Amino acid sequence: MAKKKSLKQQAQSLIRSKMNKNDTQSKETVGNFKQLKSIRSKNEVILAITKIAKDLGVERLKHITKEKAEEYLKNSKDGYASQKSIDRNRRALSIALGHDLKRVIAISEQKLSTRAYASNQIKEITNSMNDRNSLAVRIAHNAGLRAHELITLKKINEGEKTKTRTWDQKRFVGREGVTYLVTGKGGLTREVMLSKSLSNELEDRRLSSPKTTMDRGVNYLQRYDIGGGNALSASFTRASQRSLTFSHGLHGVRHRYAQERLDEIKDALKVNHDIARDILAQELGHFRGDITEVYLR
Image 1 (cartoon, rainbow, N blue to C red):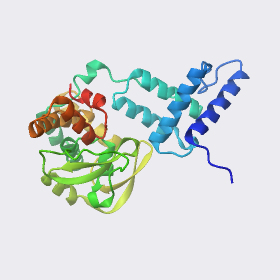
Image 2 (cartoon, helix red, strand yellow; image 1 turned 135 degrees about the vertical axis):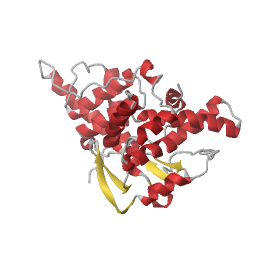
Image 3 (cartoon, rainbow, N blue to C red; image 1 turned 30 degrees about the vertical axis):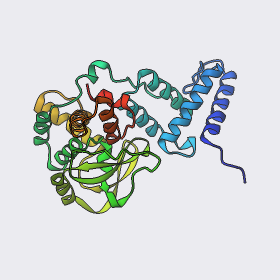
């Protein structure tokens, strides 16, 4: 029985076949990126495809669908990746799929500086939403959740946080509440904390049995009847425009959480900015201070 190829070996084979195909063609083929000629360029794409496949949790490159690829690029943007990084990933995914994916534009510095909502603005927005979506947004604000993570909420005894990470025990310092689990980018499962009152509201909306919910081409197991994912993001944008005449998007609620929590951590532990930021990064599911810094502008 042949040994299964590693993701890197699969990427190497894929690039080799693409380059050979280009050598026999007189004009560019969609997704093949004819300019991929140097050893350096080839290795960059191989490494990018390998990392993306690992992030997506697939064992075979053929399991990367167009929908998963587009979601990955959007998540890169939402994670404030540079334009160079997004373009590199788009190039690698386009090659892997044989399909020229649409270019995703990185969030500009100007947009980054105005993303966070004020707490009173979030209250105005949620007051104009239905109960199901209002609760979801209030939970996102209280726990710093991404839109799709709301779908994955589950009790602490229904799973476990990712074991391959080293978690800081100072997470949630200065807060009291109920701990839940969510699964975010790259399949990272982390603990989040909800206030007792929000936990009570959430449990009132617990489903009799979990249901499968699809968001942006990905299936999730949902245990609570609350909004989440792309549908909630769209609803939030409409509510924000109605209430405030503008919208920073649902991610702006996560920015507010980050800014509030940084001050709470500093005050509770009497630590400097960098230490507080790194603790906050784990609460947000980043583990990277540079990304977290963007939320603090």
